Length: 265
Image (cartoon, rainbow, N blue to C red):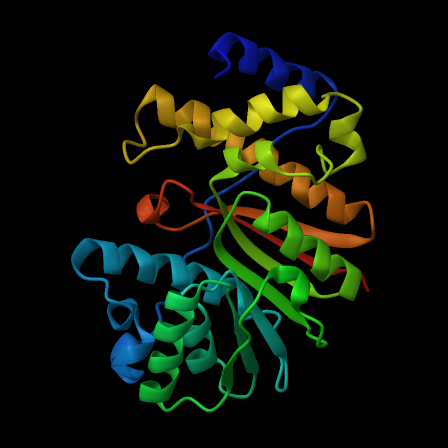
């Protein structure tokens, strides 16, 4: 585990190189009308209750808010690392003229998602059991809510290869230390940090916690922001327009950032 002084020096080097972080709070979002959708669609249909379910609703609402500007009738949307469908099902309900695919590799969560789809009656959502790399069909939008480690990078890279929009809320950033993918993702970051230094920064990105006023959270939030900035910069280098927001409310989750990218016209 790197010391804060080591990590702070890395952040100072990035800023000295002209790489600056901007991750504002998302504009006020329009809530999903949860009472208007089948009960199986909401987080409680995925066996969540109380404050945990409310926080998941906030997370989903932030993703849905970002999608409103890019989903078109007939859009094919892929929910990567979808688990039991806590994001994919609400998106299918909110955008009934789209087609949503729930992609996950774990048999148990796939079985729960299958039951929820059947009980919800939604006709525009389908299961696609497997890994991110196994998605072979065309799609226009790729999304992910708390894709762990390099799962975000795998899904984002597939979107870039397909010329698809991405809307991702990354999670467990420290796990990228185990990844065989090349890091840093962008040339700008690679000119400043080597892989070992980047892994230290990724490790510190997981310091975020529920106490947003704490020094620990502030340090982790800053590191998380720079890792997610690197992801967006990699997309910009291949012709994407990007955005980077903090979820609203910010205490929806300690992993509260959303990165968005779409091909430039």
